[in-house]
Amino acid sequence: MDEELSQIVETTDAKSWDMPVLDGTSEAEDLGFDLSRFPGWSAEQVQKYLDSGWTEDQLAEWYQQQVKENTA
Picture 1: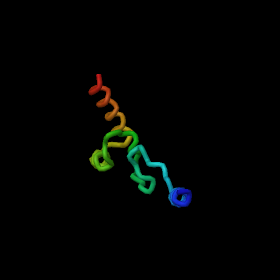
Picture 2 (picture 1 turned 45 degrees about the vertical axis):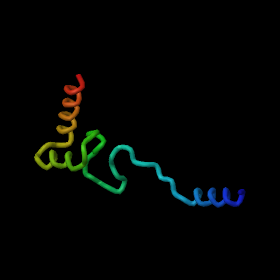
Picture 3 (picture 1 turned 180 degrees about the horizontal axis):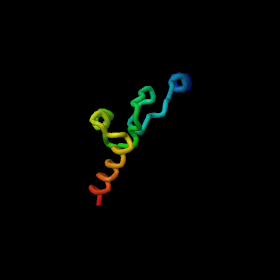
């Protein structure tokens, strides 16, 4: 039994346990904007607004207004 436990511990120690990214972004991905400013929106949704002429700051301000209006 001790030999089995030793193998499990060795296998577990050999694995890399990276912390997950919780803000919806990928570390390897440079979107050109901060997706964490738009919780619940995908990168594609934000990019569509930016492509239509919004700045990131304008969009973030409008997003926050919408959140406030819809939670009041």
